[in-house]
Image 1 (tube, helix red, strand yellow):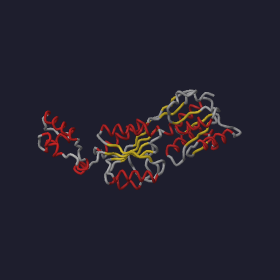
Image 2 (cartoon, rainbow, N blue to C red):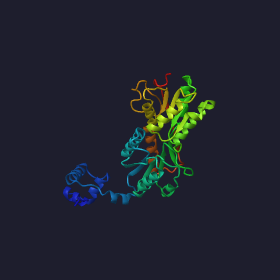
Image 3 (cartoon, one colour):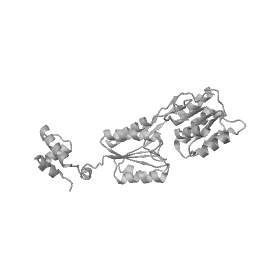
Image 4 (cartoon, rainbow, N blue to C red):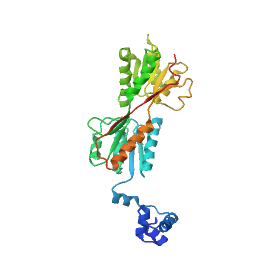
Length: 324
């Protein structure tokens, strides 16, 4: 049998209410008595009944986080920032990866809601979030990060300036004398990919050429095929803009000794140590996670103000990869 609060009270020689006050961090207990209770707790291995506490408080002290892929360095940085905030607020973080599957996103979100999480942070995989409306109306706060929710759902969002970052990259390549700039992006179903394409296209203006665009989930084979197709054109690209860190790394591997000046969206580990170093548009996944968590915990604490829509800036980190 697990030790109970009554067992602790008997071991410490105090009233049951005194143990309750110490366990719940309430005032009114002499320091020496509180220390005696804590020693009994440690000696007996007593653990507070969280289920009973949740029934009394109506809160579970847990939050849910749904991301695209826990193995992606971008999302690992975002997740760590959310976890740090959860720890500061005395909460447990439940995390799951959707793998860009809207059905999996829905499954994870509703599973977390079934466990009565106090709030949600979601990186959307789909654009239909009607399934979440009953939870929001029931008082479960949600913050969408990296991508906005689907149409018709006004919720807190934390995004980066995707189109502006693409414009920074293209302007930098144009300033280097390039006019044939290719774009290798992710699936057009992904909000961030389409926003980066928009910034690329609008900045190029009349120089835009549809033949220099490839947008689909990247694999080594598909990226190699895209590069070979573009380089075989009569007027091939002289520079590349890659739509995220995974694509940049895949491109670097696919070039296999060939070199095209490039700028990648997202910084990545060792980008500064390669020769030449890779110029990138750097966003701040830690800052995004921190901002999303701050918004969520404000909502959990009772903030019922209008939905906030935060757009964080990006920056161009110039290294050697744009030299002709």
